[in-house]
Each structure stands twice: as C-alpha cells, then as structure tokens.
Amino acid sequence: MYTPITLTLGLAFLSTLTSASEWDRLDKPYIVPNLDYLQPGLLDNFPPTGSNNDVWGPGWIPKDCKDITSDANLNPADITTYNVHYDDCNTAWVVCLHKDSPTTLDNMIDLLGRVPVAARQFVRHVVALPDTFGHALNSNGNLVMYDITGDLLTLYLHETAHSLDFHDAYNGGQLSNSQNWIDNYNQDPNVPDPYAQSNAVEDVAQNTVIAAYNVQVPGGYGGIEPQANNIFHQYATVQTWQRESGNLLVPGGTCGRRLDNSETVPVDDGGSKLRRGVRARGEKPDTSLGEGIEVIERKEFHTGDSCSRTWGKKERV
Image (tube, rainbow, N blue to C red; front, side, top):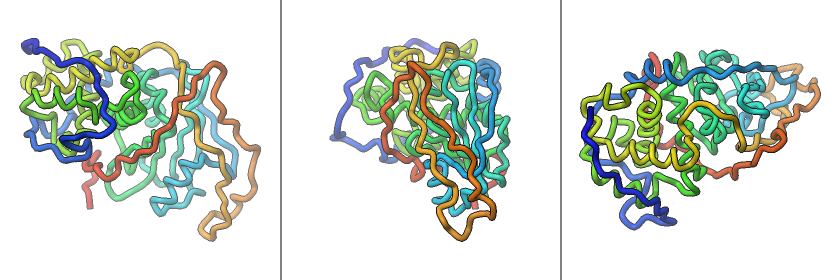
C-alpha cells in the first residue's frame, strides 16, 4: 500500500512554456529499468475486443501508410491493408502490414483491440514494418511498429498515449506541456524508467501505461511496485484527467468520435520500385466514418526523435 499524497489539480494549459520545453530531457532518476513487469497484469485485465476483418483490393493504400512506408525506404507495394471491424465501433480501423514485418495481423488486431475504445478513438492507422531492431513511434496519430513481436500491450498503450496527449484528449489541452503537469512532476523525486527520462512527452506516455494499470488491475500499481509513491503525482495526474475526460483508460463502451482515415491513394505512383501487376486496381475502398461519429481534429506531431526504447529480442544496431 502507498500513503495518499495531495495531488495538485487544475489543468492550466500553456501555449508556450516559460521554464522548459516538453521535449527537454528530464534529470530525475528512475525507479525501474522498464515497464515490462506490467505486461501480465495488463493482458489479464484489458480484454480483447471481438472483431472481424477484410483485406483491401489490389492497388490502393491509405496515404499515411504509403508515406510512412516510403519514408522508411520500403516499397508500399509490399503493404497489405486491412479493415478491422471491432464490435465496439461502427467504423473500421485501417491497419497496414508489410510482408516482411515479423508482426502478425492477429497480433495487431488483438493488442489494438485491448486498448479501451475511448482511447483507441484517437488512433488513426497502425503500420507494421520490418527493421533491424524493435522500436515504435507515433506520427500524427498513426502507431508505427518497426520489427515488433510479442504481446506488448505496454507498447500499444504508450503509443496511444501520445495520441491522447497531442490530440488534446485531456479536457481540451496537451498534458505534457501544461503547468499542471509541471507542478505535479516537481513533487516527485523520480520518473518511472529511462524511457520516461527522455522528456515530458515520453514521461506522460509511460505514466499513462502506469495509470492504466492502476485503474484496472486489482491492487493497483502500489500492489506491484514498492516505490510507487516516488512517481505518484505523475501517474495520478494522468489518472485524474483520463477520468475527467470520459474514462479514457477504462475498457467498455462504444466509439463516438474518431480520427478520420487518411486519403485512399493508388499504390502505384509510377515509380520503378513497385511490383509488377500492382496497376491492376480493384474498387476504391470506402473509408468514410460511420453514422454519428464525430471527427477528431488531427494534429501534426512526430515522436520519432525521442524514440529511444528497444522493444523485443532484437538489439539496436
């Protein structure tokens, strides 16, 4: 058990920070090397969502998937695109899987479906690509998984947390550059792990994983981590504002808003690298949002520069 501590409330969002930037490195020591020890509890208490899927016809791809794949010096023609229809939403999530990615479609569907729909609404596409080591980032609401294997729900929650933060899910403001976050961060002697030391953006994301655990797993974070008090104000701030913003980290419910899907574009742009036969396009997929779904305004952001965590068994090279 941890001792209750007073939490500074009142979400005062700043347009500019006078004392620091949310991208500045943090200098507090960490309490654990990583959050992998939370995986079993999260998997046991964030259940999968029922779903079915269908594959896109040939010749078409979401523009964001195409751009992300091309930026990784990979061939968009090697992407297979799927609609994933979860039982809790009348609009499919569109996911893009490269033929050489070690990630499986079933793994993508399972882990994305375990993210509570209130938070999943802030995810645009999931893109799985090959690389020489496992890492991930969030680009404008797209979760991009490079060489990811395993049931890494902590990773999906972490990357979704960036979408919540940058798309102002917390009562209309970005948490990581708010005075409220600074005030509560300053009350703690530690941050969770080395990844959280990267900057306030990554610290908020890691504390979102911890807040999700604390909300949903019996015994909470204090039941598994004896130093929970040392980062209490950080994860409790996320927990407070996810509750005030509609229980973003609590399973259940249905979708009512979504990031819209990126434009559907031809795979073949005339480049010489594309596979033969890709020009034979099928019917253009309809990716419009379902009836009654409010469109979340998409923000431009990219977390790749602060992506420092290696995930899975392969080492960074």
